[in-house]
Amino acid sequence: MVASPLTAMNGERAVVFFFVFRVLSSLPLSLLPHALSLSLLSVFSLFVEIRADGCLSLFKTRPGASSGIMLGAVTLPTMMLSKLIQLSRAFSLQQIEIGELEHMTMQFWAASACCCGVLIFLSILMWRTSYNKNPHFSCSVWDAKFSLSCVILFSVVCCISLATISHTGFNTALKLLWLLCHGFAAVKLIQHLLNTFPCCASIGEALLLTSGLVLYFGDMLACTISKVCRLLVSPELVSIRYGIKRSEIGIIIQGVLLGLLIFSAVFKFVIHLWEYFWRADNSESRQNKEIRRSLIFFASLGFNMIVVAPSWMMIVLDFDVHPILWIFQFVLSEPLKRLSLCIYWLGLIYASVLRFYNISKNSKIERILLRKYYHLLAVSMFLPALIYQPKFLDLAFGAALAVFLVLEIIRVWRIWPLGQLVHQFMSAFTDHRDSDILIVSHFSLLLGCALPIWMSSGFNDRPLIPFAGILSLGIGDTMASMVGHKYGVLRWSKTG
Image (cartoon, rainbow, N blue to C red; front, side, top):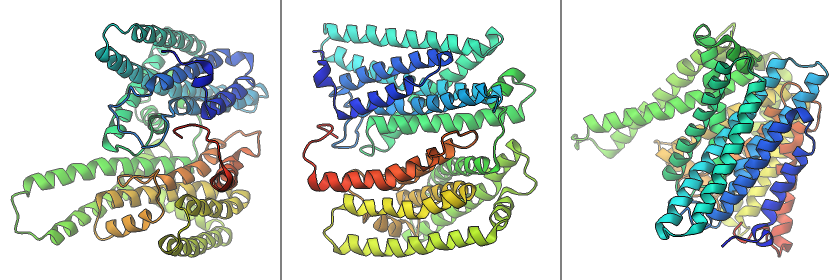
């Protein structure tokens, strides 16, 4: 049974459509293929979201949350297209080079390929589910035809767009292969996330996280290849997609995240080897095993952060000194301002966390309202730094993200002696949207404030863009939550 437009449309989908329409209405004619592809992606994702209700029971998603497939599928491509519109204006004014514009074009198509690949995967799952329930169900055949039409049109538009920035068919084929790898990686990653961390996220949230990770680490991989194997890779492909100038802070943040990713895989592998060779030794006490496991953890973490990650940074960018020493030099280049800012942050965090933690244990205040105080805390912390020390704030966001990742790894794996303490502390601020397996609220707040600042680096003719995350999350979301919780009656979505 096909849902009518009125029953299919809810508040969340209406906001997403308005968001996409607003971006499409600002497009120049030169980006018409991108507009068509985003329109197809929006329609395809809406179709998948409507059909997904009750058909994707293979995954255990966050209870009480809507699937959010459409929102997760169009958010990142729309952000990339918005940045592409901005760079198009800059290129017309001769303020940037053609390489930066073509790099962002590839980023847009890579993000779209990730989302389209996951949507195809979800469509196949739904088609198989419907067919297994009723092999003669004609609607499943219509679903397959509609999905296939969207995919074919999207692929044709993508090929036409890539052909316009490639001088030969070989380079176009290389770029299409690169996009195909993004889509395949996104499908494998979202399966891994939903199966490894059940009940931690909706499908849309997992899709947004998946496409972001694949796009980010795909850019890192291509940047590494262009530096190490420049003679083996097509020079045109390297210069177009990855020849843009990168800042030291951006490379350091990418390197730290790369180090943590490698560390997680290496530590898990070492622990499995340890348990395999020493599983017969039952005489060792549990505490000694925990201490030994903790030593392996911190030794691996230190090696990756001091040796592995800085080695990658020095390969892709010519640092004069070790990246860790560069950080100290950067902070001490303006010691009064930056060290004073660090002291201000530490004092504010200590006073606020101590106060809110005691309130959370002894008060009956709703958790969702208590957590909004941290949004206001983010405004008081980040707004002065964004105005007076924006570059230092970029680095601080990366450091905070790394600390959050390390603490979450310690909490999930219960690393002695901090694992249980971190778990008890973080549990005091969780609500029904967090799970015992994974707590992501603090990541959402940090990235929501940081991403607009990071994405506005380089050319930016909209001075309020860096403030978008801090103001919308710190003030807008806080006020919406408090007013909605106290006076709200109607819901945007029945499940949201």
